[in-house]
Image (cartoon, rainbow, N blue to C red; front, side):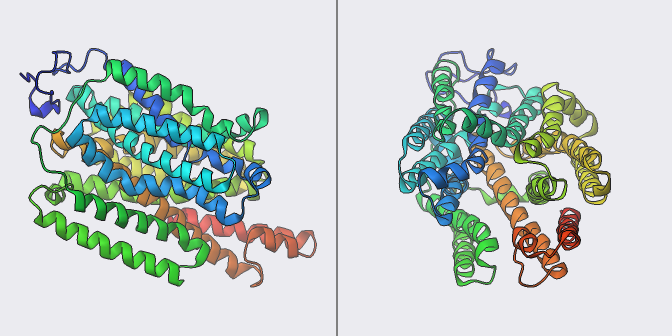
Length: 482
């Protein structure tokens, strides 16, 4: 018989032993958090680790530019398209089961990617890793909500969020280190011992939990959400390359809008919806969702452009640029792992914490945009401000989303959180990249379509300096928009 109340979000399987979490939380909750955070770290790393391997893949596999794009995008495209479906499956069939399945699929995909000897095999393996990644990203956050008592949720989610920041920052650094010592396949095979450890720990430590209402699976809703989100993300990814008014982008965007509209209509009519649209009547939920999209839009695009600022304007090599951005992730990790950010959140309350985080991140982007004349010190100030803002705001919004919906729907809540983060980040990169390109094109010769092309056609040092100044101006504009 279940002893914990629904308010704690802890549902026991019928007949399960009393090792399930209580109001005090699961006795091994911090160890479980460490294990699932390690598993999540590999998923986040694989969003960025492949970028540094592009030259090696081009040489050893003979990959064309389109192949490289699909190697990178297949992972994020499949992952973002499946997040809602993965969260719903975790709620219905058991979060421990889906976490185990996600680890297994991610491990098998990593093995196939590491041993691939053609571009097609690597693209297929990356897509398989995306399926596992979707299951992992949703179930890890859902499990966190199950094993911790409500008063510990803020700190636990803060640590969960910090792992994501650490992964994005460390991806290029770890990838560069592996490529310096091993062949390109090693960047995938390094996932295998982590997956093996995670599987053992999940099987032995993580308690099972699921929605006991026994809703019928919403198969059509799952299909529509997957197609709609995948089409939307693909349109965003393709826009900068093919042009926002190209037939490919417009058709894909139209398909995305149509399918997602049909998804919303279906979910409002079906008696067992995958995504309960009544969630959006909750102001706390809607506010957190809006804040998450705004922050990921501004930060995703701005930080993507920051690496270009460091390399093209300040003249850093890729490794030094990666190290230069480390203070941002370091600030997030320190404030969240120490529990300082969680204490601020409790003291300030969610609305004030989110507002303060946005102010700090905006100030950081202004510092990066306007203090370029000071070199790296201005950038460092901006990174530290952004880091404090991220450490406070991202966990606050994730906690607001997860605590605004029934505990039985924790997987769907995690899916919503991940989907909106992916969408905001992709849209931010695309839109702020377009701001940069339009500003740059207005200041350099029309024939120059990129910074390398403009530099190659520059006549003399003065002309090259003018081109770099135009690019810096475009970066400033895009950071301010962010």
